[in-house]
Length: 126
Image (cartoon, rainbow, N blue to C red; front, side, top):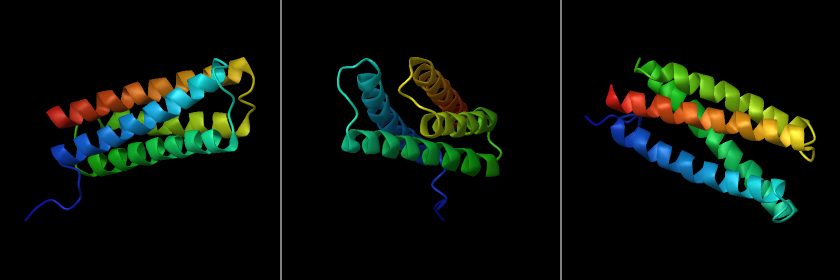
């Protein structure tokens, strides 16, 4: 019978595709505001937050589902999930209008995405 957990190779690849698209949307919106190309409106800020929530949920889903199967790369995904939570708290609680907090938020999220890519590619190969 087919694996209904959606954590096979095809499931990981699909989830990583969703993760990449959502991260790209959040990154472009965040960098556009950070570099003063445009200002965050209510809609663009909500899109940025929604894309970030999608990224966080997909990383947590991958970490939990691949951890249950005891695949390699789970540690990198768990670290990415925790970093994503920390970066989200930094983004929501502190004032991102300052350059320091915005840069910290950006760096934390990029490092989390790199770790998620490493973890997923390791899990696919194992």
